Image (cartoon, rainbow, N blue to C red):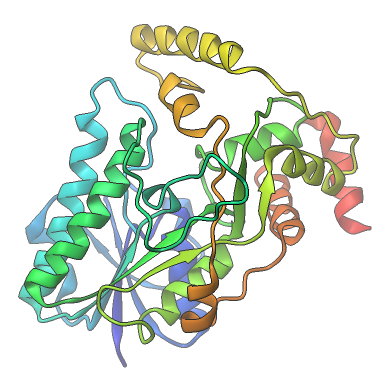
Length: 342
């Protein structure tokens, strides 16, 4: 049976890819770091190989006997004392994975990029597509994802690998064992806190994203790129949907740019002292405020058979996971449980 190495297997997307491969009767090999959260795959019976994408020798050892690679590993951080701490691991990891695959005789690489590499529009009527790139990223993470995907495409051509890039939008859902920059806004909305601003995004279930990764093992040509997105919604509409799913009145609160930037500056100042990541940065405001992460996802539907569930289903799945993880405030919990059961 074909063996598929999954890097970043303890992460949100990677862990769900492992589960989906097993569900389809495939043979995944989970590539995890020694410091990876043990609970992420604790109940999953899968072969594990320990290493780090920044260690070429560990990658080469892990790829022995494998026939394809799904590269999900990434440094998902929006702030660091030095931007190089975000940029280098992502770029080096991408290069190391492709070079190790080439040396191992592996041709097929499913590369997990992000919609942030596609970029955003300042108008809701201008949908981005696979031909677009983010040429003006402010956040180091956005720059890292963009540069790393470009590198993967170029290196894939040079090494004659079959690299297929997948660009998920805002990924939500089960088996996310830490509160990430993706899930934090939704969790805050569910708990009745947080604020929104002008703009919008596209929500997608991690389970649908995982299925697309497995499909890309056999569909799509070398150099192909696919956006994995669901419904395009304004942030205000998302806040209203979260309120509906949790059985509460909408607590949408909008703030102007200057207020967000002031709060972000204060948080960054605190982070410089404590070393703890700020909840918000000015770079994030510049990248996202007034922008629409709205996309035309028709290519993935046509080629990969991608069928994303509705935004309401995605939010329900995510709130159910928040409840399972004990992340909702006591004042919200009973109401949310009742609303989900209705």
